[in-house]
Structures are given as structure tokens and as C-alpha cells.
Image (cartoon, rainbow, N blue to C red; front, side, top):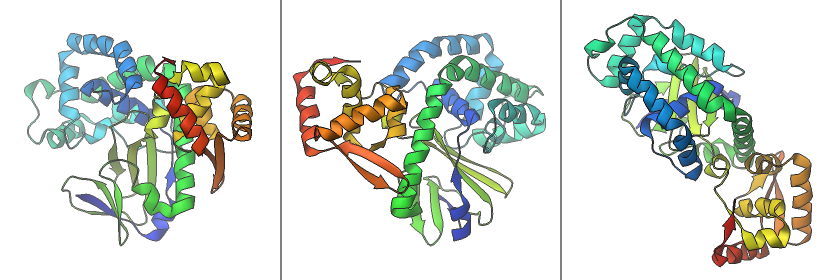
Length: 327
């Protein structure tokens, strides 16, 4: 397994950051695998995968570059620069474009675990990669970015609350498969057999993305490290919990949409992200649901989390068994 040695000061100084570039790169990887994790990803692929494949069919060199650069265990470093707090997509993709051709080819030998194919022995690989990432961002990510950013912000709120409630070990154990706190200042970052890295004293950031089943680690020299992880699935899929029509008729569609998503504790900001409703509307629905004994709340650090009461769970599950749903 791959693990990092982290002292207490480095871990205490680490933080969660949101990266438009990481979101775009995660989306590129989802387009490459075409393996959706939930119905929301399936709808997104249906909308964008055909055009992506047509684009690569017209450009076989870039298609080969994608296959070579996104390896089964290692991604070519120049394709995914380490995220920085506050960095725009344009600033990050400029780093991809500025990579030297020799660096790009050397990185590909690592991701391929062998020599670079003859068609990739050329000097425009960084430019091609940057153009493809810009295409993914422009056509398949930026149109959804407002909602995705709210989802990512909601995930950060939940993770920060988890750190406050149970410490870093509890938060790190649930980031993604293969990541867990081993004790003795060791963080397992993946299941691959790589040599451990001493990162004490470096800058460490944790970066959520909305694409599920996807995550990676990256670093810049010995000064900056990042662990990119999929945000909570309940946040990522806006249609993950369909609203029973009978429950919508009973409570109203908007209020029912809030209730059905509280099988797992969520904050008000997370509910805003997953339902698309305004903050005031969500707050009013929560007050009514609490007064009715269907929802309870508890404090976790600086956040307040809402979840079903026993009565709320019985009501939602009974309506789910009735079989008719609405979006």
C-alpha cells in the first residue's frame, strides 16, 4: 500500500480546497472510462460522451495520449498538476500547456510502464492535453459548475464537521476506498505498493470532486501534496432519491424533496446543494418537518445536521413501498 508520513503540525495545517481543474480532470477520466456510478452520471455521459468520442475519433493522436496518460495505477504527472487553493481552471490548465515536451514524454513512460508509442514521440503533447481539458471544462463541466461548486462546498462543510466531531482519523477513513489513517502519523493514500513518502512540513490539501469512483494523489516537489477524493454520493447525484408521488401530494413536492434526502445527516447548505432550492425555502421546510416530528437536528462542530426521526423514516419508507415516484 502507498502511505505518507505526516506529523501533527502538517495535518493540523491541512485544509479542504475546491479546484475547478480537478473537477474537469475527474470528468475527463469519467468520459474515458464511461462507467457511471449512479443515474446522474449516466445522464451526464449520455449528454456528453458521444461528442467526446467523435472528437477523439477525429484526432487519433490525442486519443492515444489520453489512453497513455491515464494509466491503471498512475496518471502522467503533467496531465494533473497539484491543485492550489483559489486557483482558476485557466491558471491550472496553463501549467499543463507549459510542460516541456520532454517532461510529458517522461511522465508517459511512467503511466505506461514502458516506452512511449511512436505516434506520441512529438513536441505538442502538452498543448494537445491542455486543449482537450479545456474542451471538457467548456462543454461538459462549466455549464454545471454553479451546482457542482455548491455540492463541493457542502461536502467540505460535512468533512470539516466530521473532523471537529471525531478528529482527522474519522474523516480520512471515509474519504475514498484505499484511504485510511494507519496510526503513528501514517496516512494510507491508496492500495498500490509504492514507497512511503515523508511529507511532514509540506502543504497538504484535500480536494473533493463530484465524479464518483475516481480519485488520485499528486504532489509538487516536496513542498505541496494533494489527495483528490469523490464527494459524498448523496450530494453528487441530484436524482439519487426520487420523491414518492404520494409523499409529494401529502407534504408538497419541495418539502418532500427535503425530507427524502435526510436518510443521512445533512446540513442546510448541503440540502440547498442537492435540492436546488433556496436557503430560505429549505429553512422553512425544515422547521415544519421538525414541528411535525419527522426530522431532528444535532450540532457537529460549527454545523447543524438534520436527519430523520424514527417517525420520519417510517413515513418515507412506507411511501417508497407504494412504488410511484416523481423527479
